[in-house]
Image (cartoon, rainbow, N blue to C red; front, side, top):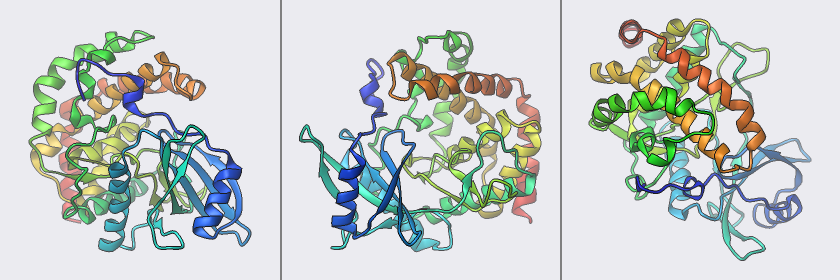
Length: 355
């Protein structure tokens, strides 16, 4: 992405808004399914929960008009590859149309084509911001995420090297001049002082580490437990932010919440690392930079949410309500001693590898 210019359109946070009746007709025509449609949250896609008369559930997913078809194919092929390499992993499945296609094209009233897909429904409820799972649940989630990385280790796709993904921290969007001016002033006060270290040390070092396609979105709203009262882990959803990036970056995404929001940040972070290491051992230099990647992701989140608010995002109410929480998270992460938490990462990693 050009560092000189950045617009809200570049970020593609513009899901379409097809009528449910139209989508229902298309699903019936191409997938042979009928039922009730309930809107689901989507940052770039229009999503609906389809519940058929026999109680089965599916996700109807419609890409925005600016979403590259190759990028959507990247998501489809990623899901197919994980299913092939480790079919036991509880993630969505990309389902075929009646004539064996991975997607269909539907047309909006203004004549633009949109890719529409049907995904299997993964039962469970998101961890959410209020749930603070015990260490063993965090370890299970970390192990699952590592298993996804292992399943994708030999995967490649034509889109992976040239695809702009705003949430791919390794691409350096945090340094874009358009994200240095904020509505609330937190970017200037908290983020800008971090940029010299991020640009001079973090980005060049992380980009020299091993890379592959990663999920890149295992935060609290995409990690599931079996029920609102359960203390367990049962699956992961939402592959819309996949990217080709450092493996250690994938680990940083869920941990900004587990470390930045929890009452026991070192225990939570260590437990997640331990679980991850049990399935995908990390290198010393990857563990050494992990704390910096938590700061990088948390800081970019503040920038992007503020930027979207400035540009009157469609989800203004939700973003304004969410914003104070992510600022507090970044401040809490910055208050943690880097050496102390990095030592914990190394110690728990050893336990995970030797478990």
